[in-house]
Image (cartoon, rainbow, N blue to C red; front, side, top):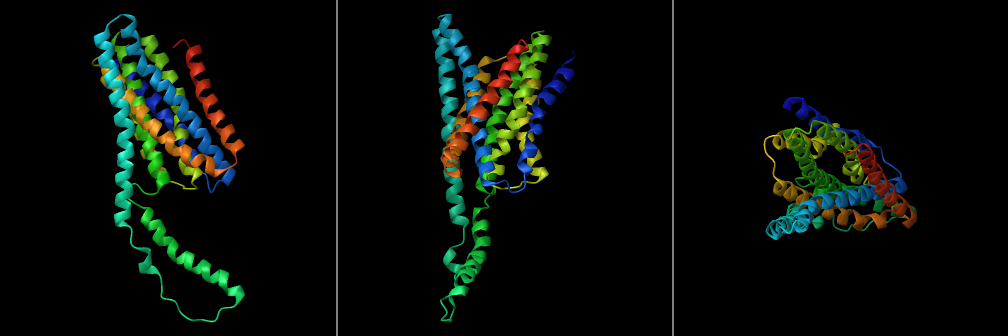
Length: 301
C-alpha cells in the first residue's frame, strides 16, 4: 500500500468525526434532553481522558521496566509539562477571554431609561417588566459575543482543539506503523480510530445542543476540521519519522485540555437537570467509549 493510500485512509479515519456533529443542529431540545446530552459528553470525554493518559504513560512505563531511568525521567517531564500547558494554558486563556469580554461590554446603565411616573395597573406590571427585559436582551447577547461567540461555542471549540491534539497523536501512530512496514496494523488502527472519532464528534457538539445553540453547517464543518483534520496530518508526518517523545507531548497536551473541558462541563452539568438524568448520561457516555474500545480490541489492534 502506497504512502498516499495510507494518508487517504488516515483522512477517512479523522473525518468520521463528522458523523456525530449533526446532533448540534437539534432545534431547541427539551431541558432534560440538554442535561442528558451534556452528561453523555462528559462520559465520553472522561473515557477519552483515560485512554489518552494510558497511551501517554506507556513509553514511560516501558522505560522504567527496562531500567532506562534517564528516558523515563525525560518522558515524565514531557508528560507533566504537556499536562500543565494543556490544562493551565486553557485556564489562563479563558480568564483572558473573560476579561476581554468584560472590557468590551457596554455598561448596562447606559440603556436604562430614567424612571417615569406613569399610572400602571396591576395587569400591566408584568408586561412592562417583560418589555424591559426584551430591550436589554440584545445588549446581554452582544456582551457575550467575543472573538469566539457564546460560552457554549467557545467550549465546543476547546473540545475540538483537545480532540484534535489527541487525533494528531493517533495519526502519528498510523503513520509510524506504515513506515515500519506494518501495513495490517496501520489499517486496523485506522478502523479503530475511525470508530472512536465517530463518538468524539458528539462530544464536541453536545455543549451546543445542551445550551440550545444551533450552529451553522459551516461552523460544524470548522469544528470537524479542527478535531478530525489532525489525524490526516499526523498520518502524513508519522510516515516520515518516528518519535515517541513527540507523541507523548501531544497526548499530554490533549489530556490537559480535555481535563479542563471536563471540569467546565461538570460545573454546569449538575445544575441542568435532576441527578438521575446526569448520572445516566454520564454512565452512557463512559459505556459508549468503552464499547468502541472493545470493538477495536476485538479487531486485534
